[in-house]
Structure formats: C-alpha cells, structure tokens
Length: 499
Ligand code: NDP
Image 1 (cartoon, rainbow, N blue to C red):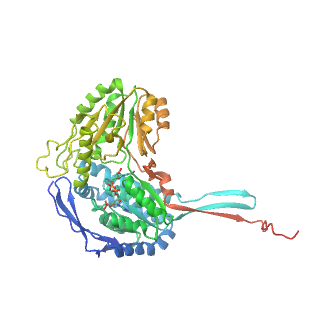
Image 2 (cartoon, helix red, strand yellow):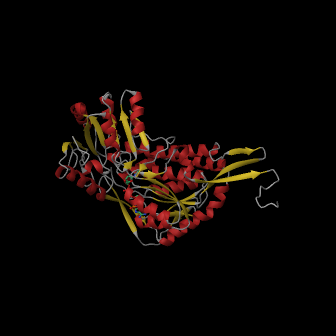
Image 3 (cartoon, rainbow, N blue to C red):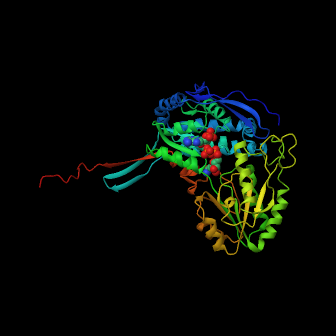
C-alpha cells in the first residue's frame, strides 16, 4: 500500500478542531512500512483543562435531554459511520497495520453496532429505574442518573472500536466525554468527533485530546472527571485505577489476559484448531482476549500440531489493502521488540519446542521489509512455568500445553493472576457447561472464539479488569443510582414524640 501522509491531527473540543498549545508533535507511522503517516499535535495541561471545561458546559443540557432525543442523534452517527466504513477502515489499516480485510469488516462495524445497541437501549427505556411498593402508602423509586464528565482512554489495537465501545454507552446515558486515543493510533479520534458533530451531538459532548501517557495521566487525575474508562495493559491500568481512587472516581478497567483454550478429548479437532488459530493469529495476535494457552489432550498432541501446521499455510502476510491478506505487522517498533524478545526468551531460556515461526520476517512481504513484520510462531509441549506461558505477549505466539485429565487442565488454566477470557471445544454440551462454569474468566466461549457482539457484556476477572463493556450491564457502568422513598401516610414515624 502506498503511504499517504495524512493531514495533521489536532484536538477537538467545543464542537470543533482546536490547535494544541504544547508545541509537542508525535509523528505516527504506518507499521507495514515504518514510513511516517501523520503529525499529531499533543495536548498541554491547559488544552486538557479546556476540553474538560467544554465537556462540563455541555453536561447539563445533554444529561437532561430526553433519552429518545439522544438515541436519535446517536443512531444518525451509527448510520454515518456505516456510510463511511471503507474510508475509515482504510485509515485504521494504515494507522494500526491491520489488514483491510479485517478493519473493513470488523473495526468500524462493531463500533457502529455498539452505538446502535446503546441508542436503541436508552430509546427503549433502558434508563428507567424501578419502583418497589413498601406499604399501601409508601413506595421507593429509583432513577439512573448520568455521572458527569467521563474520561475514555484507549489502547492501540482496536482504536475506533474502543472509542465507540466507550463513548456509545457514555453519551447514551447522558454523560459527556473527553477521549484520549493511544499515541500510536490516533487518526480515528478527530474523524469520530466530526461524525458525532455532524449527527447532531452538541458541542462539548464528545472531545478528543491527543498525546502520550502523560496526557492520559493528567486527564485521569483531573478533579472534574467523574469516571475513567480505560483499556490497556494491566500495569498501566493499576496506575490509572490508583489515580482515580484518590478522588473516588468510578472506573471501568479493560486490561490484558493470558487466556486458556481447553480442547476437550472428544472435540472435533478441525474446529478446535480453527478456533485456536483465530485465538492466536487474528490481528497478528494483538487481541486482548487471545487464547494463547492452548490445552490439548496429550494423546491428541501430534494430530493437533499437524493440523496447526496445515492451517499456518493459510496465513497470508502481504500488502494490507489486498483483501487476500489476513496477517499484518505489529503496531510499532517498541511492540515488535517486546514480542521478539519473548520469542527469543522462549527459545533460549524457556527452551520451549519451536513448532514453527520464530525470529526473522515472514516470506512474501516484498517491498514491505521496513515494517514490523513477524512470523506466526507456535511453541509446543510447553510447561506452565515458562515465561512465554505466563505473561501476555500480545503478538502471534501460540503456546501448546499437553494435559492428561480434564480436572488437571481446568486447574492449570486457572493458575494465573489474569482472567479475561477462556473457552472450550467439545461435542459434549454437558461437559462444556461444566468446564466453563469452573473457568475463572469474565468472557467465555464454547466451540468458537473471539466474537464479541454489542449484546454481550465483556470484562475481565482478577487482574484483567473491573466492570464490563457492552450488553445491558454495559450501560449500568455509566450511571449512578438515586433511590427515593416516598411516604404518603401524613405521619412521620418519629421516636421523639411526647410520651
Ligand atoms: P497501555 O497500557 O500502554 O496504554 C493504554 C492507553 O493508556 C494509551 O492511550 C496510553 O497512552 C495511555 N496511558 C499510558 N500511561 C498512562 C497513564 N499513566 N495514565 C493514563 N493513561 C496512560 O496499553 P497498550 O496501548 O499497549 O494496549 C495493549 C494492552 O491493552 C494489552 O495489554 C491488551 O490486552 C489491552 N487491551 C485490553 C482490552 C480489553 O477489553 N480487556 C482490549 C484491548 C486491549 P500512549 O499509548 O500514548 O502511551
């Protein structure tokens, strides 16, 4: 794909593009070629203050607008996103290095789906509270109130999808947002803000500040922020949660994982291998819910490996806009170094058995050698104590772990401080549910992997996160409850009456 240098990216608040005052510029690159892609102007503290003020000013009117009115506006934004799907997807491809065959069918689509879901939910009464009749003359009613100005902080792997999974429920519930994309993939931010504005979202309701981690840290700690919704690494999430806790802010934390797939002894091995391939190599392994610990019955190991090697032939790195390409480079040089170091560690220190891949660039990337390409890599016959089995690599690196009994596999699958996702492959549905119920993870799949529709609430257990995104429960993360007890008896039950 020929690189096109994009117009510079600025900030967005008060309903329009705004110049940044920091003087700092981040130059983003196209990961498939390592060529420059755009200059992004970073926000100063006073720029973040201005964006937050803009969101504060907009909050009252937006939060008091009828949900059906907000719903109509957000549905219009979903329609605009769909109309501009291909154009936005092409930019996401250049920004992230993910093939167009993915971004044009997943990234914008699943973001627009979330917008449509939450717009319909609030338009259909999803923000209604409950009533409880206490006595003939007394009842309790509850209301769901917007929280205020919220911060959204995104990771680089699904930029526009993450921005939409956060802003859709946030705005639908009546909040306003200041959003900070990852410095590595910021190109969607301004586009999304413009689409919201075009759809009728009032100025100040959705704002974008660009910059690196320090901008995120300043935003997170800002006293006017009521909630922080963060997607990123566990280590960063801990810092963000600690900062938010200082002022008792609401948080949602969508963090990393090291998720297990258990191939049960009776599984259809072809389906199981297809699932494991998706769970490790889609988006070149840069998916939070990756199933990177693949538990395989010891007596099926050889067959499983053979089928994995067959499927690896169907991984097609290449020019990103070619619809046949299904495997891109890693997102950045920093990340490339990190993943390569894990592979080196697997070979040199863990002494894991390399089934395929390893160091070096994949074949068939003629003309793209400058990019951050890496070979799809499989280590087999691994042990739980290996670093490559324990830590999130966030790249195309599968580890296969043979097991002897299902109980043993479940116990080993749960022996991790992380708990984002888990899954089983089996034809025995009773066993499927029994095993799933024992797995310590917030997102689970049976006989499939990776699909995460807007209807499905997703969030990690243990150190993989706090709270959920999407589904009906996803809306609850953006409201606070107000309970009111009404007494019509005309008598206050005081204990301080005259005896
Ligand atoms: P990081 O934690 O490095 O960064 C996430 C975001 O936080 C970026 O916008 C980053 O800015 C910003 N940031 C960095 N430091 C701070 C700080 N001190 N305070 C506030 N914000 C800060 O994660 P990655 O971008 O590397 O994303 C990959 C990770 O995200 C993986 O661990 C993956 O598992 C996880 N993830 C989880 C998902 C889930 O739903 N559970 C979904 C997708 C990814 P900058 O980029 O400019 O440094």
